Length: 238
Image (cartoon, rainbow, N blue to C red; front, side, top):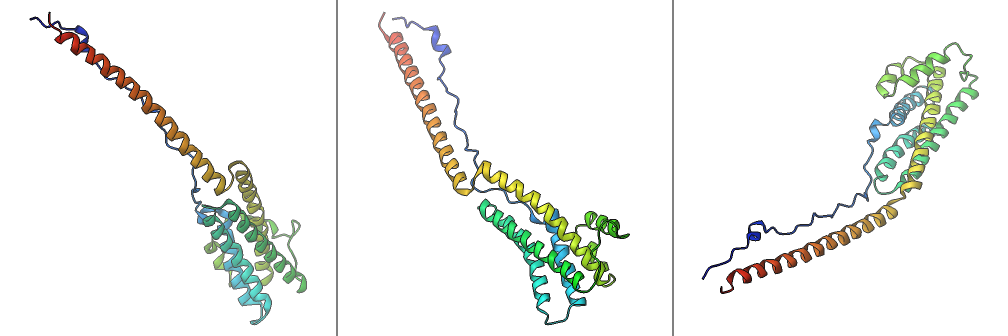
């Protein structure tokens, strides 16, 4: 008996279907920004340190204004920290706390304006000979250590005008930042929308993977049938 050899057996290969599964790209938790790298936070921290030194030097202990100004300055910087941290899970909470921080800074700006007005001191404007120098210093320096050497040297008018300018800068910077957050919230939604998108993405991935496996299974069944036919043909008596 002579076995007939089918040359096709040397070319047998299992059918393969490339996997089409993919990992859902939708994030549920947003990456957290480093609040200490935000320039308006750095300036807010400098403003808090300056305000603490200012009230200690120029306001009477026990004066309610002391607590109000220090708490407003602290609220400004602390709500930036909390808002950035909470933004990982809740864009809505981040926006809310950022607006609280901004409102606190605006309140503090008004306190410095009132201090100057009630004591007959000048609120520097563009016509003041030192206005441009002060503005440039506040714009170019972000950290508390940049301002600290002057805490015991500046007069109350100098410190109040410096703090007032910092308040204005922080307010403008935060307004821009909050605007970007609002735009992002509108386009990407909050955590509920991101969770829904993640679940839908996961289900889509699973359906695609199942279809790929079914296609591969069909191809394997066909290959097994073909091989069985070859084997039967080769073992058939001459």
